Image (cartoon, rainbow, N blue to C red):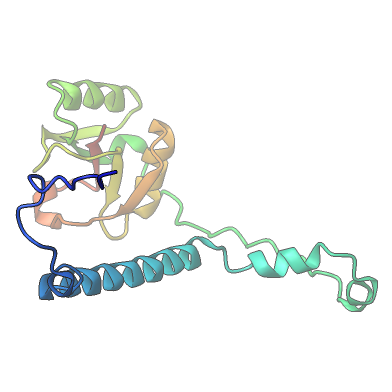
Length: 186
């Protein structure tokens, strides 16, 4: 019998094991970068998990286990005293003597004029109706001049406005003698 002939046409060069198994420098660099990236990923996952865990979560988990002695030794929780309501200044001027500036801060055409008409129906005097410096106010605001906090808060109550503050970003000279400003928001 004749031994089977090797197909020499498929191999066009002899195998060099020393070159094929040798690790090239770019392969080392790729492996090193992959290890560094994996380490950074682990650090990010640990840091993210630490940020997501609520500070009292471990305490609550241990408190749910039945520890009779620990529960009996724990002092009874004390109830917080209700906060005393903050007393605001009362309005000194009647509505007919309070003068307002109404500014459109929402960008809708005619909004300031409509609001000024509603405010006049409540008895307030309108000093000026104009546009606010910008039209991106998210909420309607009542601002008051120093000494007129009571009037500003009463106006806010009358109109159902929740945001009330002293003048912010405006000078009293810009009010043209008015005691309060109503800026319409979105």
